[in-house]
Image (cartoon, rainbow, N blue to C red; front, side):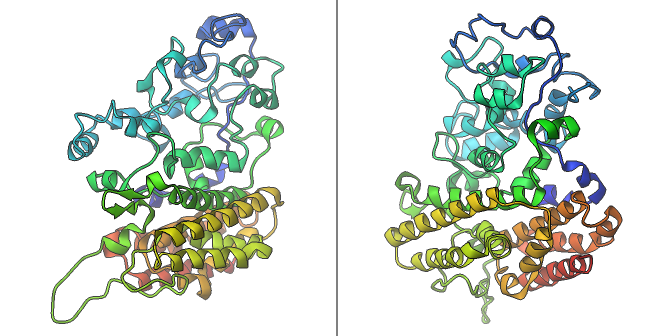
Amino acid sequence: MSRRAARTGIAARTMRARGLGLVLASLALAAVALFTGLPQQGSANAQGSYSYTGVASCAGSTCHGRSEGNGAVVRQDEIATWQSPFAVSGAHSRAFAVLSSQRGEQIAASLGWPDATSRSECLGCHATTVAASNRGPRFQATDGVGCESCHGAAAGWLASHYEVAGSHANNVANGMVALDQPQTRARVCLDCHYGSADQGQFVTHAMMAAGHPRISFELDLFSSFQQHHDVDADYQQRKGVADGVQLWAVGQAEAVARATDLFTQARLASEGLFPQFTFFDCHSCHRQITDGAERRLTFETNPQRPLTFGQPPFNDENIIMLDAVAQALAPTRAEAFRSASRELHSAMNRGREPAVAAAANLRDEASRLSDALAARSYGGNEAFEVIAIIGGRATSTRFTDYAGSAQAVMAVDTLLNALVTQGRITVGAAASIRADINRAYHAVRNPLNYNPGDFRAALGSAVTAIGRLR
């Protein structure tokens, strides 16, 4: 939570309207090849003997490897940002090294592994994992989560990427992943930041018990952490800019769709005797247990969870947010989504088979919402409307557990900054209620000290303050 709570500067966040996709440097093909060693037309790469070229193929001083961001078209110091040894923006480059850190070694030891650096269970997300036969001569697995993990295997689009007259559309046609599209970006990020069915991209309860961080996802926030580029006029002309509210909302929809889809898959459903607890709300079980004459309840009734007392709930942090989104931004789909989410919780009482059927239905509803949110236009009072619903009585009563509450304060902060970026409120006005936001963050700083009532009061204060700016 500390990483999220570190976002204390509203003004700095107004600079976040920057995308993740690589853009073109206006350089001659021959010059690029000379300085970076990139394959030219007719090389082994162009002939298709390998698809992944490695981070070094992007790191020339005439491309993305400058020490200062003073390029004429793009900053050209994107590799330095990606490699930052301490900043959050460098986390992807450190991903492989984390496996051999003290924490990585402890996790491996707990799971009975000699080390984590060679385990397929880890490499799917801690490195750009491809077969050796598909790696170019400059590819290094130790680079961690490299450029091609997100932007796609570069052999097909590398030449068009550095052409003077090239275009983003042409790059995408040649295989670059269109990260400027919110749904595409969300699905790429979710592969590791929530999980996928591919090898090495699913964090089990055993891994978390051994020390792996809890899985949580919020697309707009994660995008800001990994932004390496300026969104200037040139960028907007090439790719456009996704509205911050849209990016956040689509991310919530895709997160629900991914979680429920994975839950339906039989091979991910259990771990030995027990169900796969990855899908459940961690802190509904991981609370202090005391023994005494007078009981200390650690469970609070949630009106949207028709569960049998003591039944661990499905982790609904993104479900709660998407319910608020649907009410504000896709009202014709709101009731169907809410009904499907209630049915999932209810089906948990009846066994695996009905729960899987309910999860599949909820997945479909979330996917329909994602399509609707990706297709609609933005620019009005959407952020104000969603914030009001999150802080309203009907939604706030659902904040009975830590995960959903942490997601809610991130959402309010994200949407507040979207209002600043859109020019709906000033930086000064937003900064004036930073204390209210920080109180809500403080209420979820430590899950062991989480108090639902205190959180709801803090969030309500922040939402009321934002509402006064409308």
